[in-house]
Length: 410
Image (cartoon, rainbow, N blue to C red):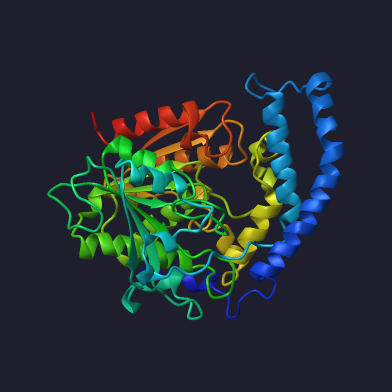
């Protein structure tokens, strides 16, 4: 265990750390900001049309259509209008009342439909809190307690094992960590893990980790939650760590990288594969234009540095500014030999990112750091892709094809 973790930990939480309002207050805020958004949009849309027709940038690309320009820029306007307030978390899972009550009504319809067609088996389980012996070093924040969380099993008919069955011999399993900037998201809010599970014919456990919206759920809460999923697979279902495939997009990619480092700190077995879509790799936004993609791609990418900064401030309230530049929070800045734990365990890494997203350059730096340390890492750039473009569309097809090759699945 490293001895310098305490230098990153604050004695008291950052008093400026934002908290999510109540659901009622947030709905009122949403309504008011939406009215402002509509007022601005009436002038903004004609401006965007004119820009597209008479002020096309040299950086514009063929797939940057008028519809795409308007949709992306309006979405970014909406986010920037609402960025100051963090969304409230979903209601807690009611464990004993059946699957239907554990899925928010606006989420998961695709999964319910797929289950009805026999395309997947869907099951929710309770993941128990991690024991005290696993809370050390960078995760040793007394104010943040381990709690039970929900995990969602997505099992295609072709998987060797189903849901919470003990692992079959040499069976591999997907551990999915969803994105959402640590402030929103749900295991079933996109079909991404289901599509990967179906294409690989492997069962997938997707973790509903806590969002960093309050002092109780700030970091290291998400780390402890995904660690509980890892321990469940290893200890309860008897999977070998080398047979675990970490699948993460955006903030889920960030949390995957954090988990791999924390497993190394604890001396636990390392996962066998890490499959990442547009992994968030840099928490230090004090100088965002250190990466040219933050400036060059700002007109195209839907990500908002304002919202990212707000999310970071909430997530890292128990840590000082030095933490934001550490290998945990900003893995793209990993020191030399910092990825040796992946090299030594022969972990295979795949990083997919978009050429037109804000995170492009930090994804490149992340991959270069791994290559420098001798990690088996493969990258794929979607030249005109935006953030997490590998989750769907034509880029998604390439993503799945690459994953099958990395996993040696024919």
